[in-house]
Length: 190
Image (cartoon, rainbow, N blue to C red; front, side, top):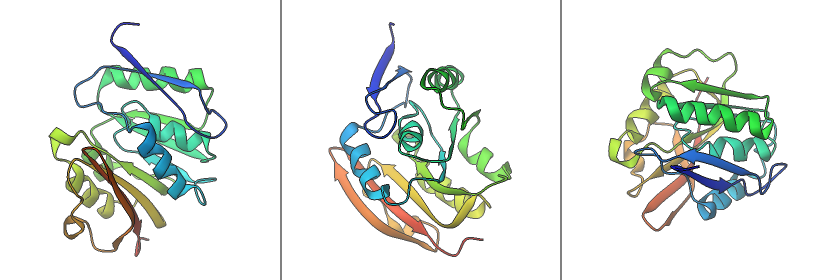
């Protein structure tokens, strides 16, 4: 299929299953090596969690979470054709515990009242849009985080902890190529 790319789920029940995704400006799937590291960090606690993939894009992080035992995942994406692709992949993979929502991340965080808070949140906006810290602030102000939630951040520069909301503490951080990423514990929610 012209204009489509593929990646594989790397672990869990859907290991080695392919996900296709369209070429779209700003869509930058989290690479295999980084995903492997992140899910090694989350391995002890991903099972049974409710996850939010805030800039879903390819869906790699949300689908990987489900493959590794997450109870549910919400995939948020603004681009209509990417949303349609996420819905197709959800059906192809046979996941029934996924919500795919077309919305702008900050607006959704401000207006959403989740019936169940999120245990794990992935925040990896398109680098050119400079949305990381704004989204973290909106997420912190929302009532969407479970107590002791884990938030994964991905950025093109070293993540500046002084720009993160109070109560966020870094658990792990690494860089790979031009990508800096980290896992944060959010305390003091609820």
